[in-house]
Picture 1: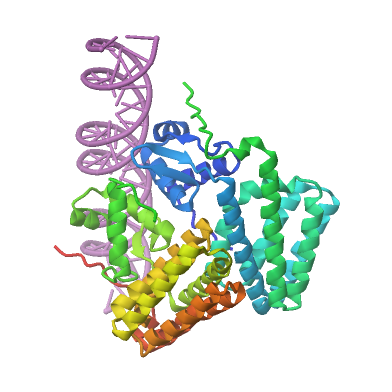
Picture 2 (picture 1 turned 45 degrees about the horizontal axis):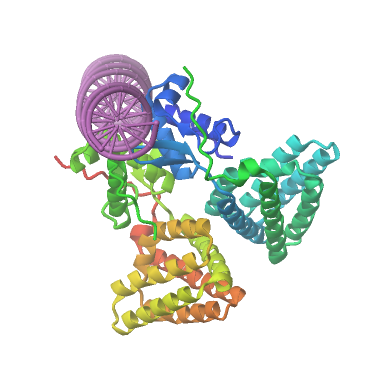
Length: 235
Length: 235
DNA sequence: GTATGTTTTATTGTATACAATTTATATCTC
DNA sequence: GAGATATAAATTGTATACAATAAAACATAC
């Protein structure tokens, strides 16, 4: 919907590139982000890199320690649960408002998106489901008809992306996710705001709790915040 | 609580300075922020100014249009209402969690802060009340024991500061605000999360609605988004 | 006099150079 | 050899110089 006006700002491009590598795990949490190294790596000067890092710092993806350089933000399990808790509430709010304010065309689009998710589930295609699931949720954000809320929800959703991606692989999550979606769509189309809110809250909270389980089973992630990942420094 | 580690980064200092001038209205919405002008004005080079502007842009206080410079973000009445709507929900969430998680010492601190507000109301001192009111709300954020939520709530609270400041002056708002606070404290101390949430939501929404009224009465603010404030450019 | 096209000017975006501080290394003492 | 101190290296923060683009001013044609 928001057509970005072909920014032509290198800072933005660098920011997107670095963000991509962070959320995809190419730059793992705790990794040192050397300005000079990144600059030469991307074939630009340090200036756009610095500006990108500042922006990513504001978004919470990297942490800048004065005079000590930037590292990929290490979001510990505890903080992550907190973030899921807030995400659940934001989604609940979106659902409550959407139930009251959704338009006819939006209802059709939402139903179609839900249908598409069903197809992906039937095909047992987690990657496609993952993508369609994102669209589904974004439609609810938009249907809240609160642009600011939509932006906040989308931003947090995006920030939690890498962690949500992990837990979609777990046993049967795709099916239960779709089942929950059905209830959410039903509540919204019935214009029952409180029910939609409650179901969305549950839907997201489950993700957070499942994630907590996942964390407990992964020692690698278990001691996040302790581990210091070394920079990739290659000659 | 979060002691900032004496950053020594000029960018941060510049950011704080510019933000201060934005929220106090020295730089009104729509004003062009000329990098060179700001740089010479603050006695630094353009670099720290640019970095500060990027940061403020991420925070939503300024808007950077590629190759066209930065302006103080113009938050129209509509967007503002949306923001108050989200603020209400965030505060409600803080209250709900606080009622369940608040500790003994925090209860005492909250009661004391409430008492202090009462004193300011009795003294009919809006400025002091304004300050104490902020502390009161921050205590509730903290009592949610969700650090991420606390941060989000504080950030939005801060961003809405200039607009809240306006409407505290209106007739009797201080008294009704305090009365609402009493109900909120009662609900939290009674550990009734839903009641606390409901009352906080109402408390903030009232602010938003009152603000909408205020907007309607102020022609200057009424056509925000249309008016183009000229830069201060002095020789 | 208005509209359009060109030139000029001003401002942003990027690169590089320099300064300041931190981290690593080496040396010296015990 | 361990620890501490001093020196050296590397990296961040700031300033300045240059390039690219958009706004403004001007001139010209109609």
